[in-house]
Length: 99
Image (tube, rainbow, N blue to C red; front, side, top):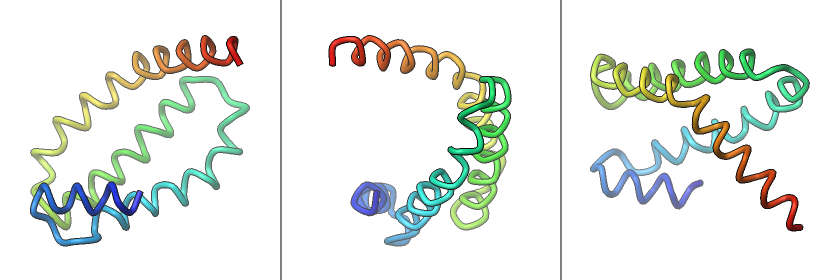
C-alpha cells in the first residue's frame, strides 16, 4: 500500500506520502471493521462502505482538491459497488471451487 500510494502521489503530483498514509489508515480501519460486518447482510455492508468512502472523500478533498469534483466520482463508486461486489464474489467462489 505504501508503494502504491507513493506511485499515485508521483503520477498525480501530490505531496509524497499523503495517499500512502490514507491507504494505510484505510487498511488499519478495515482490520477492525471487518469482523463486525461479516455476519451482516449486503445492504448494511453497502451502507457502511458508503459512509466510509464519503469520509475518505471529505478527507481527501480537504487536502487536495475541491470536494465538489470528487462528489460525482463518489456517487459512481457507491452506485457501482453492488455490481462489482457481485462480480468479485462470483470470481472468488469460482476460484475457491478449484482450490
